[in-house]
Each structure stands twice: as C-alpha cells, then as structure tokens.
Image (cartoon, rainbow, N blue to C red; front, side, top):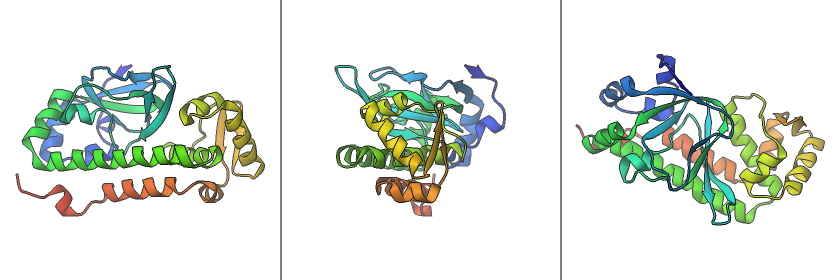
Length: 248
C-alpha cells in the first residue's frame, strides 16, 4: 500500500541519512512511503527490481529459495540499510526472495535514480559498496550459524535481532513462522521456545513473543548476534575517509 510521503517518512533510515546532502536532496522528492503486512512478498527470487526499499521501522528478510520450494533466511534488513542496492549498482535481478519480517514503515526509491547517484558520486559508491559488504558479512555469518549452532542458539540470535529492530515491543511470530525462517523443524522450535520460556528468557502466548530477560537471552545466544551487531555498528560509524575518500 503506497502512502503519501511526509517529512518523517523521508528520514529514520540510517543509510539514507548517511548519503551526501546533495544526493539526499535529489532523492527525497522521489521517495514513496509504503506499508507492507507481515509475510508480504516484496520481490521473488529472480524477479526484476524497479525500486530499492529502505525500512524505517519494518524489517525485510532475504530468503534463499531451493528447487523444492524450501527457503531459509540468510539476512535481514532494518532501518540501518536497504534492499535492492545490488540492482542499483550492477543488476536489476533479485537473487533472493524478500519478505516482510516485521511490519512497519518503508520508503522506496526508483532504481534509475540510485544508479545515477552511484555513477556520479564517489562518496555514494563508497557508502553503498561498504553497506553491501557489511550485509554480505551477515549472510556469511548466518550460513555458519545455520550449520554449526543449535536451534535454541539460533533462535536466541534471531529474536535479539528482531528485538533490536522492534525497539522492545512484542514480536508477532508463531512457531511455524520461526521454523520456516530458521530452516528448522517446528518441533525443534517449539522445544527451544519452551526451554527459553521455562528459563525466564521469553514469554510466549498466542503467537506473541515478549523478551523478558534480555541479558540472559544474549548469554544464551551463540556469538553470531554480537559479531553481526558489531559489524553494522562499525559501518554506521565509519571513519571519515570511508565516505570522503575523494572530493566531488
């Protein structure tokens, strides 16, 4: 659903905020505010992208889809980043299925406009490539996590990431949804949730998860949550030379 843009709709995405002022001034008039429902498909794997999507409260999930239809999450994107930047830089084809993992506001920008800024500005190129490298590091960490860590550890990692993006609010997820995202059997997810609730980490009722003990949840998670968070925190506070390597 497209909504009329407002000043608030044009801000509150950290990647957009990091663009050079002249690029932002050219982009902002073309941003459209859009709200998606939980589970909505933004783009299918192999689909053509006409826009890049910048969450400002929502969370988008990138899923790798197999031939048998099974899919597993390899990365998620909140207000720190965007979906569709590879299309702006190199190709219009999406390599992943992108779905809405947390409802909230999003703004989208025409690919052609981002391509122009990418080609014209070294500062924009540095920013978008740096973000894409950081997102790739999340994909790589998630692959290792899926292969090496238990369902409970992975679930803790995932809930912490969603808790950060939801800013402390309850999380509207069923065991079925979690099993699909994590690529685990539903029974494994249910057992993990029961164990976490018994330990006082979370409370779970009718498809709603509430984080009760954040510190204990972090302690129970594998190291992957902290590693990915540190990388994105570093990206969001880069040295000046990372974004200003040359004058325009």
